[in-house]
Image (cartoon, rainbow, N blue to C red):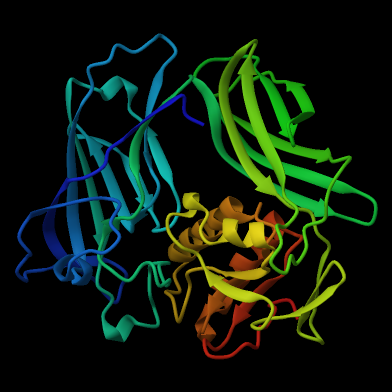
Amino acid sequence: MAQHTIRLLGPWEWQALTRTVFSGTGTIETRPDALPAPRRVWIPVRSPDAELAHFRGRVCWRRYFHWTSQLDYWERIWLHFESADYFAQVRLNGILLGEHEGALDPFSFPITSLLQKRNCLEVELEVPETPPELSQAKRMLRETPFCSNGPALFGEVRLEVYHPTRFGDLSVATSLQEKRAMLHIRGEIYAETPCQPELYVVYDNHTLHYEKLDIRDKSHPLALEIPVPRIYVWDVAHGRSAALHYVQIELADRSVMLDARYCNVGFRRLDWHPRKQMFRLNEHWLSVGSEVAIVDIQSPVSEGKPFESADEVGQPVLCRLPLRGGYAEDATFRRHAVEQGLRLVRLLQHHPCILGWIVHTEPTEHDHELDAALAQAIRNTDPTRPVFIQPRADALHIIAPDE
């Protein structure tokens, strides 16, 4: 949780740089076709015009902003993107901050030392065209209804003020056995210098866990498994509010709050029965399609749509990752695909409404290794939920890879 936030809303300058296309070897080649005229576009992009929607290639999104405030000794500025489609290179005042690959997950860069009075932020985004002959050897995980247009900034871009010690990525999960409820927290803590901050886990406004940390490195791993003494069971609500618990993870130094993350979680008993092709959620038997909806991930993930709403009303769902059809077979692409899919799972696994993960829709025969690697990585991260593939988009028959 940032101490202060400055949103870099529109209008942004949009300039097409070149049209690009994937080759059969996996490289990206340029095309000499004519380019659309530059224009100003408001972000987040929700309904682009036809030229932006159909453009495939590399574009530059440019935004100028001023920074005249005097920073306190503890203030550090990060540049945060909620989501950007698909291959991103980010520059501030001509200096490369870094790259990102993906369309649905957030990313950020530290920029404190690069700030000037007048700053030029340039985001090069690329969505190369995939020719018809490579339609079963795709190299981008963006097969969702949300990612149907050209390269765009879907979520907010903002400047965030943090302390030098802050959380990195955090994932929160729950488990419920016969007589034991557990809260699982995984992630990392960033620190510029060695320090000894205090870690609090607050559960429904009561301190559930306290720990004094001894951080020596710039990136400190965090792994907690905490028994929860009092819970309400999340269940199918049938129009009523479902039982959710509020969790806040705090990082403090004496009386100073350094950082905090929060989310709602739920506890439920869940089993998948392959023979019946049904879920057993607490005392309910649920079938896929009629009682358990299949939902695609929407962008940006940080907005929580539509899973937060499903949590609140007690609607069970299957979460479908953005893989549909055939994909490239080389090891580098598969490694990137597993990393992207796994990060989406970590960002979403605290939602109790999600009963399972559909890792691939309409896979081809040569996708077996990719699906197996992705399913195994997800099981290692989230062992409480089953992992499926969906062999046909128009069918409700779900096949678990481990059957």
